[in-house]
Image (tube, rainbow, N blue to C red; front, side):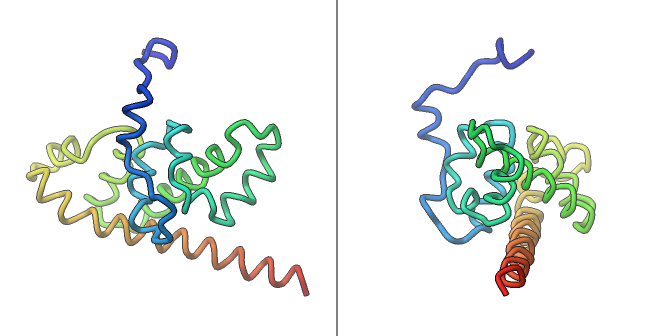
Length: 152
């Protein structure tokens, strides 16, 4: 099924997608954003992530056409984060993160590992959220150091 024949969410469904409402706590929203990597309209709702300096710089550098530039940049940053973070997570957490980023569910991963979905989610969700948030914080810290160095 391609994007033209795939049913598109209605405005009411977009309203039901949790957004961060400007929350500054990246850990609270990053995993939910990963679940929506291929939906630029949904990514727009994650304002605390869109405002990240790494996202803003990527948007300015790579997406001058301005069409969903920040959302496309956020998607790129999150995809890179998924790849990097999955390399250091324990096996089940890494598999879950990759599956979520590809549009699959934690239940599918649980079946592969022969564990209960709720038990898997309870165990790996905090690991994934913490690792993704730490990675994004690290990116931001690097950007801050570079921007301060460039201004001196």
